[in-house]
Image (cartoon, rainbow, N blue to C red; front, side, top):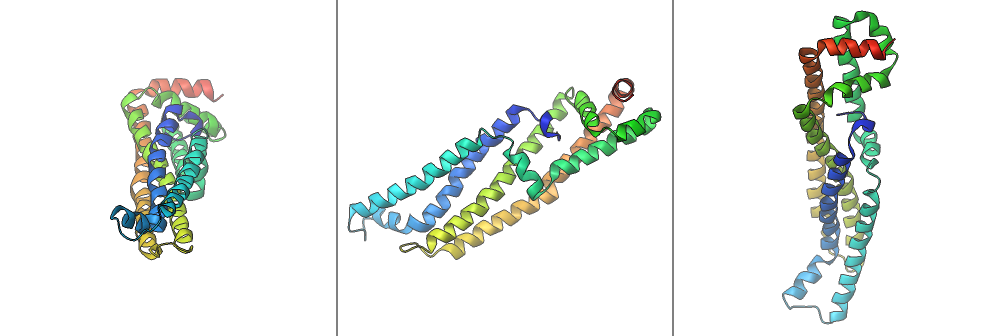
Length: 235
């Protein structure tokens, strides 16, 4: 799928549900960098002399967790946030929309060439034409949703991972912090870089290729209906 107005609310809910689990992981990373050593020593019954210290550690840690949880509960109501992140990071939606426009126009050049000029001047109606057909392709539609869900979750993972690295650095430089930033940052940065490579080399090409498959399916199974819809939508 591509145009944001056509993606169902269920997809947004699935994305946010998976992002909440990611948020917990990325919250635990900076907390572990700052308080992990003290907590581990307490568990082993070693060097913490005063339980009040542990209480302060837990209180501060819970404060950070609560802040992140509240933030993502708010974001869950703004399911279009991933549509805002997309043009800032990869622009996959724009690339797929452009491919859809090109594919439909090429199909029209073969089936109804007199309508091509009108179609080029009405891109929004082109997208509507695309979804008129792909919403009937149940199997292909489900695959498209799976690709886009993975892509949007990956966007959040990159942003959350970057914020986690920054938070880890800030916490590890505070008095009492565990100076593990270099190790944690290295691991997190490698994960973020690998994720970016995977998006560029795998997820976005899959979305592009799948949209082409959906257009090919229109040409193969509904050419007459395509001409009819073009004639009705593009005077």
